[in-house]
Length: 546
Ligand code: GLN
Image 1 (cartoon, helix red, strand yellow):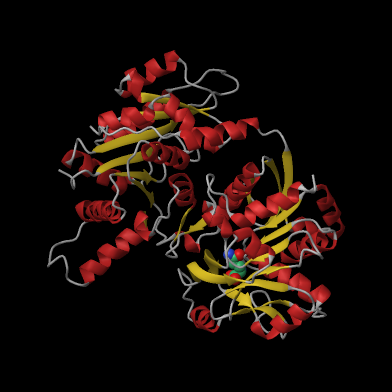
Image 2 (cartoon, helix red, strand yellow; image 1 turned 135 degrees about the horizontal axis):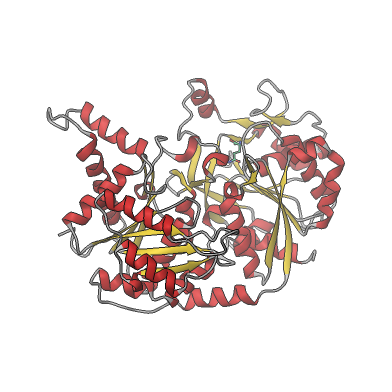
């Protein structure tokens, strides 16, 4: 028996990536939670990076940060948004981190002279982590997403872990496959063959899926269900149709229409059944009814992969804007603007007049920042609601310093190492790390407490004066310039308890309707059923511009 009352659902991918494995897992989590179970989720990433922190967002999408500072895959954000609770580093692993542990253990003679082998020692470490994360979360069910698609070399050892667990605890472990059914334009028919191959590949690793989630542009018809059932050795009712939806927040409701929750509980021999989908039903209905649009420009630098625009780099920002918008009975229309555009052609910023609000998300390095500063300048002067997140806050401080505080050469140490006007500077302990090239997992990461100044936009939005928010940065507002900036009218409405680090900047309402920047990333804590107060307030003010 697996540890008493613990159940595990492995979710694998077939055919191709990017078809919504993460949101499928998230929906299963939301549904099982609504049925009264304590659920947790894990993401396994097959790459050798020890965590996601060293990857460029255009490589692998957003780097999501947990309370304990873990830099992980964006899917962890999806899980938290649907689970409505915080996860920890125990819920995330990569090939690199697993090997690291096994090698450290070997070096410490913990294998007692044995030959340490890829199989079984790597999958055994994977299983150990899954079991301990489930225990730590006091969960009854753990949903484990195996990154990538079956057939890749990279995730074989994780599939092996699933196989080993299923053999050992047949009644406590399920394996699902999220597959894709293309409808080629020229053929005009939904094709099941790629899914058949994917299942066969999974079979060759000794695993038969217990159910298949069939992602496609359209719902599956009966004929396709029959075909998948026949060729993939599965019952028709275990093939779940998952057509494209307008919003991922319809997914739990849609999946429940297919009774996926009950199907899973029956297979796992779990009896208790509440049915508390009310909140998800209400949210889904609300989204369907909204017909007013709020136009938001997102100015960033991590959009392109080849010839494609990749909004995945900013997924939590996008979701947080949606949460704030839905709460204000609006649907956001987001426009992606590559900041390079405003660097090459500064007068083009005039087009920002057409937006109800402007967001500048986090970022690193020199490329495109003068374009962003131009845009911020326009937003400030034209009184367009502005929300700056991390780098977006730092660049707003630079813009203000240059144009309002007379520090015309203001910059950040990140861009100009020897500047005398680094209004954004590096923290001393960070300096040491940079010198020794100790880059991985060494930024100011995770949740820190901050205090808010009474009567400010921030304090009013939070309706509180103590907050905890997640960070991911090396640079800070330089204390040397705080007085000058304040004298020129900038308000630091949030700061660390020792008052050394500036956490929020804003302009008084009398001067600008909403010009706010946060050194932390509020987007990581926004959830559809509880929108983040800063995003909510930003959209509320943007609504007045419509
Ligand atoms: N590059 C900036 C820093 O390291 C901002 C980081 C971010 O936006 N996440 O401080």
